[in-house]
Image (tube, rainbow, N blue to C red; front, side):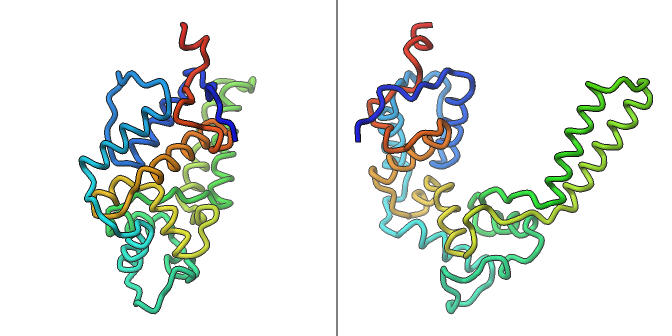
Length: 230
């Protein structure tokens, strides 16, 4: 498959979100003035960082994560990757994931809003609509918007949340957590090869741009030529 010459970003924040994801995934800090123009340059920098600061380990990263999760959940060795996750973490996902982050020293994936959370978001939208579009007298407008926003906060507070999409088993969670903590796991002795690093960079760029990750090659540039010329 032929790769793209450019990913066609326009510099309106899409590149910033990508680099933030790189920092979070590989546990590194990037200078703001790095003269990069291609994804191959990002790959080379990350590979050099992992070589310098990683543990040089040979352990499978997903396996390492699974054992950490199983230990944090106080589960026995009889529990395998196919065990359903919901009964293991309980109903309060917000608290459970917070405790897992503390016990494993790994960032957990974001949980999804439940029905209370979704309704709470609608309440915030209604509050904004009341302030911007209604012709009510100022005291009534402020009261109505405040009441709607307060209801939204309360609904989000009591929302039990839902598991991340595609996260049905403890093995699924281990894979998601691994993808978000590659750098930290490499530092702790997990295996992280140059091809794996490149695959992750492709995936992060694809998520930000909405294109097939296989279309992104080492020579693919970030910006349109018009944006570069400007």
